[in-house]
Image 1: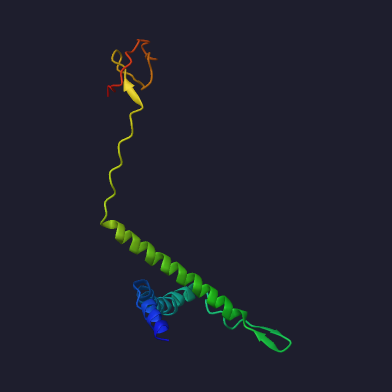
Image 2: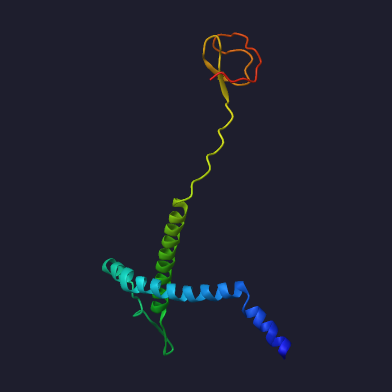
Length: 144
């Protein structure tokens, strides 16, 4: 029994288990905030335009009430909640990326060069200028 308790203690006090427990606690608190935002702020605003509380819709079959309106209301609230969470995560990601600078991309290899005779821009692999028909020296140098 001592060995079992020792193994349980090691499992419960592992770092990732504690992180998970903290995440669940914070998630529950965050859920209360999001629920309040949806119920107390967004639903009344949407209710100005369209009725969002459909719990009055019922279907009676053989004396049994099927409250599909409550289900529809829950689905609408879920969609609103997911949208709000999406906006919050998108905003947090934008804030996180605000401070970080992307590395400058390496400049692309040139694809054109200038003809030394007529100064027209031509393909980098050209051996003869298509504009003045001069023969070009084959060099790896780019004359821009």
